[in-house]
Length: 168
Image (cartoon, rainbow, N blue to C red; front, top):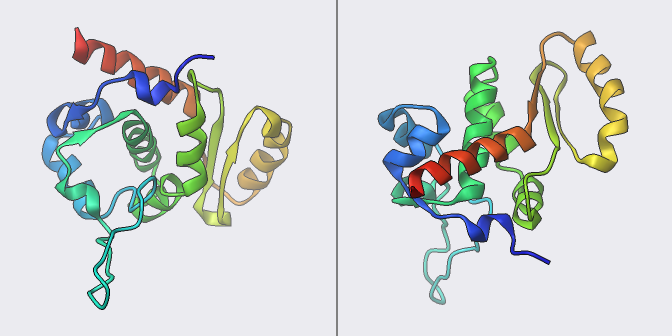
């Protein structure tokens, strides 16, 4: 069995990450300062006994290197925002631990989907096994107005392609 996809790919600088995500550098830094991805995929901080146990809710704002999973989730958030989903709702979708965990187990891009419909409170991930439920959830979301469907496999393939360009 091959390596996990995210372990085979390089990390990139903030400027390169902004380009891959599809926002300007200042916009990218603004997303991070606002807490994009929160602490998803990170271990809790270590604190000395009796010390302040507060973990920074926006730790990525200090980061200078970004990996595959971060880039995929940030690109997904950007696509949701471009479709009219608020930053807060987009961030709540991509900051879910189950989304990070699913991508961390991928050995290649996986065709899964995120359905976001803030009007009816739907933020669902559809894997291969769940795809049979997608038409019903789409009908439900359509009945409540606007919704956005993001093909995560396409996002993963895009990020892999962009990372390959960065390495060459």
